[in-house]
Image (cartoon, rainbow, N blue to C red; front, side, top):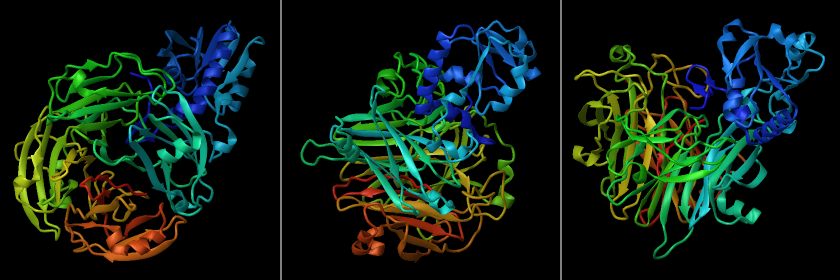
Length: 630
């Protein structure tokens, strides 16, 4: 496992990690490593604990002969097998070069200069910084300088991808936002590098694989797109929806239509929520190396969830390369509804998986499995103040056309029990059915078809239920699978539980996009469709306890410049839901005025809504994943 710190719930993301793995920084660090190898004996001064991550992410760095630290508590550390020494011993150094493992080191260098022998050349990581025009904030390791993310990107075999989002940074005061983008091919080779300005206001935008391929004269490709937002304000996360669509029609053509959420740009030790293949399915896990160092053979493993037999991927994955792994090749005896756990050694950000069934193809993402969580004894006591507490809402699509299937997913390393219940609600908020699913073990293979509960449409919620014991941590997740009965098309989506719409708070819940909890407002992004595929969304008003009887939800049609050109208010019953289609609400003529990159902003200042969005075509193809807000 890579010796790096990426993200934790208390401190957020580690900006140093992003500074070391940025593709341009990786090139500069490789050049620095070559210089150091040619320069003779190397000493490293590690005042801030940076060196371990530097060497983990860049194994081309030459091993030091000497390691110096300034913190007495760090004297027990080693780097490449070399024990740490106090910086006060620097006058006795026999090295020819001293590397200060850090950025913005002028003060540090000034402080130690009197101790340095006259023959010692002093360098730092400042020479590997991104160029000034790519920086947003003055302090180099400011979060706003590294608003980066990755996206699966394909234009191959009649399938293409389209990344869509909005310049939500304009709402925080940013005036000149642009993307620096780099497209990597399957082997990790650089296919294209370019910049793309975003609208000056909160308008929508798209990055289309077909457009990029034509612009740069590229052959077919499947790889990954690296995104770096520059000139931003207020928000350091790059959020997007990624559509996978068929570009061919007719007999024999793939009928692909799916959407996945942003990549959650921090590597994790483990991921979960990967479904085993059902009969007739091929499940491909896309391993996309997020770093400039190769992933060693055996560093990535798969196992059936709850079982400790780990099957390694017995091949190396090149820097920034993409590799499709057939799950059945590694776990031939594991079938749906069994679940699969993925251990990645922190080499990849949240991976995608692809399910092929005949001519149908759809993609979805796995989720971060938490290592930092433990059972929370407070959760079973919440009912007196927070009602049903943590809820995981998901839609039940109209039963005449769709099957809706739910599968609870263990999503923390400790979880050996999942005490869960299904609560089913009609669209008007009435509780229509309940089913206690049990205190499920980690290796359970339960998947529930909502038709068994006899309700036609609306939504359901996974909630904790301790009638048979069990423990909880608030990180309750589920996989939701939807099948179109006529066409056979499938969509997978997954998410985790939150506390919704209560005046009381518990830890960081109900979550808020801006400011402390409780988060009791809504700002969701809904893309628009086109002539062939119409967009839709299922908006859910979940409530842990009693809240406003109805929402006051504004659907705001935003054009490419960020101007609102139409609005429609709707009311959703508390614990209810509704399915909306923008072209029906606004009319196709008005929607056309928003342009190809227009979108709907779902806005509510009275409650926190949750939603799922997608596209539908007239052949029964559809996509579905959870919406994102900003």
